[in-house]
Image 1 (cartoon, rainbow, N blue to C red):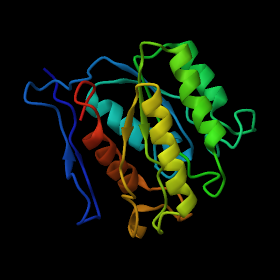
Image 2: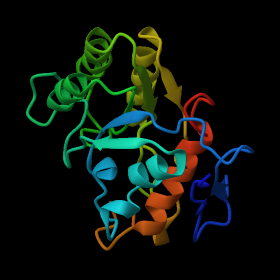
Image 3: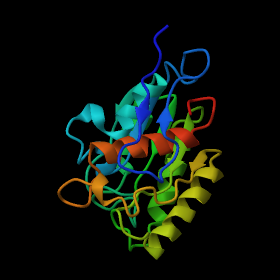
Image 4: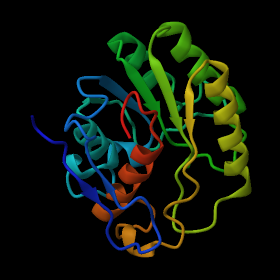
Length: 212
């Protein structure tokens, strides 16, 4: 059988884990799952030199998933589901696609805003439209600087909302803090090595049934 690729972290001595690989059987636990990604520019792959090197695709390939990337640069949960740039259109697309798993990330855009209504709507709508799907939320990514206080509040809202619909919350901390070499020229989006690091951190927290 084909062994999933190993993803190694670059340019960060302190980051862990150091790699992502298939299990002892040689087959990823989530092989064959169709996984929809909802998110912002990080999930869309901005900063990576090729879409194949964005964190979502690295994660999907390593775990044998079929990736459906719905992410839109500049989007966020939103202060209101009807806001331009909210995740609502991505949620609708995910429901229509009927994936096995939906993985939601983001929150960096509107980091200083109260996104309670948008967060609640995303997960309630996903569960209403996909009653049997596995819903996974990742704590908001940030840049190389210290995590903003309001984004910590948003992270707590996300955890509460996804838990309320029997989903999984992956707390990653702020893996890119201080890692200036892992960002592209704009100092906002991760470069190839930064995307690789994010893939490893997310993979390490995945429920065993779907990967990790």
